[in-house]
Structures are given as C-alpha cells and as structure tokens.
Amino acid sequence: MDNEFNNNPIKEKSNGLAITGMVLGIISIVLCWVPILGLVLAIVGLILGVKGLKESKNLNGKGKGMGIAGISCGAVGTVFSVIYLIVWIFTVLLVKEVYDTVDNEIDSYKSIYNSSYNRSIDYDYDF
Image 1: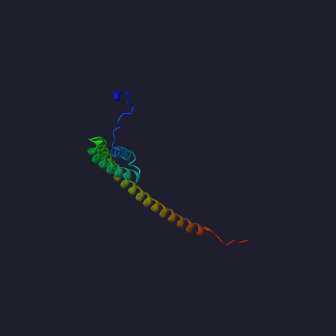
Image 2: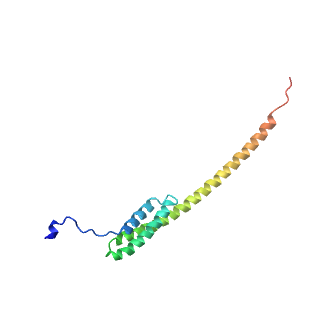
Image 3: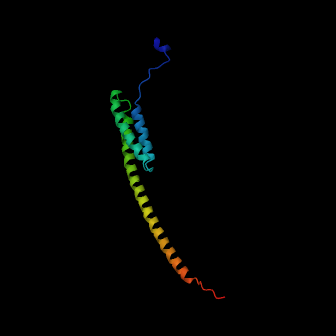
C-alpha cells in the first residue's frame, strides 16, 4: 500500500565512467584528424572504458556494454589519431622542404637579376 503513494522511485546508480569513456571514444573517432586532441581523447576514453568495465562488475553488469564500447572506440580513435598524426608530421616536413627550395630559387633569381641589372646601367653621362 505504501508503494501506491510513494512518488520517489528508487534511483539506481549509473556507471558514469563507462558512459564517459564511450562518449570520449566516439568523439575521438570524430576528431581523429585534429593532431593532438584526437589522440588525447582516445587515450582518456580507452582508460575510462576499462575502468567503467571493471566498475560494471560492482554494479551487477550495469554499463558493461558502454564500457566495451568505450574501449573499442578509444582503441579505434587511438589508431586513427596516430595515423593522422604521422600524416600531419609528414605534411609539415614536406611543406617546409618545398618552402626552402622555393625560397632558394627566388634568391638565386634575385641575384641573377641584380647582377645583370647592375651591368646594364651606364653611369657615364656625356653632356
């Protein structure tokens, strides 16, 4: 009879670590192309997914699937982020090399232009 009038249901404890690990793992996959951010989010999501999976044993399996999803998404995000980080580093080094080459070519053309320009000027004026 007491349950009829009781408007406060019993709240079960949720597995916040597993939820956070899963969310960060998903975000890390979406942001894996951002050089450092994606990797950090993936590693934190992976760690929180493992902790959430361990905590699910104390909560009678609550959040087990989200913990596994956090581990999976964190691992995939880590792999993608490392691949993109390598691509970013390679791109920066390639752009630097191209910039240096173009800068050297421009300097050589300037020196050739200046040397030929200085020879063609006639400083003797006959009035």
